[in-house]
Length: 362
Image (tube, rainbow, N blue to C red; front, top):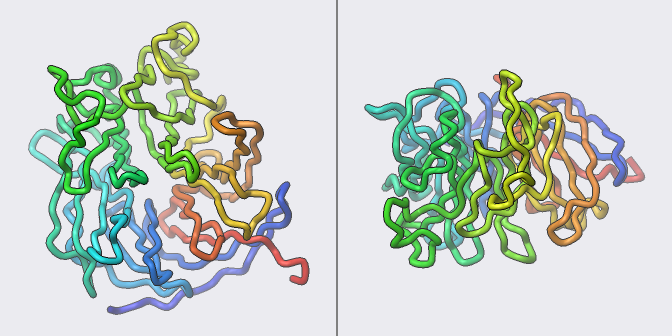
């Protein structure tokens, strides 16, 4: 496999509440990288939104695009999104991709899986397609997370269509839960309900772009873009309705008010929200001792906020927040096997950044 050697930029230091954090550039030259997953050998699978999947080594060497990646709808916010490894990857080599799939009726978020070979993905199959397809380049969702029981959660935006997020007969504005082969788990909340898509786990979402499994409870946590204001952090429960577009902590782009969630107690409310927005994308729980002050915290990749947002937690309550300024749009955050935090920058010349605690000895 052809590899491109890295060109390292100078390290920078950021003062944080947990001590000085060193930021290194592991790799550059990536076109709007979107998702990152670590392979068991320490290499990284990285997606680029225009439709490329690459392998990056710990020293920053970057492969040629892997073969077998499905064709993507790469307009606007569309493209190749998240990447995840099967829980049994060591034995089955299965890799999952979320992406915007072009179709006759528009585009829709889809999930495909294939076996990772020497130069690409083999035996690629589409295991899920968002229905209906929609014209337009916005609000695809596109994050993936495997739960401890082996089920796969997929986030789906409402494609800037608003009302369909409340309609169980479509996949827009939903989080879905499927088996690794795309079949429907028998214990999904809407299985057997007339006029409801059986894959749906929760609904009333706007554009959910971050998901992570809590390391102790096994529950799904999710970050979501609000409209003008009102970005959210949720713990999506089975069958719960999160209210969009009926309620929001934000308002419409034209300034029209939207009722706040407490006015409609029938909807589940966010555990945290932001005004002004942070534009939350990928999220990750930090579980390592490598940065002691961050252990047990939730990290959020901020796009318009150009920051990593660190939340301290007490159970399911947010007790504190620190914004770590990165000076560029951050699309994803992932804890590496070395305990460092790896972040993707959302740029034409996108980078993989590595954040670690600066040694007191330099």
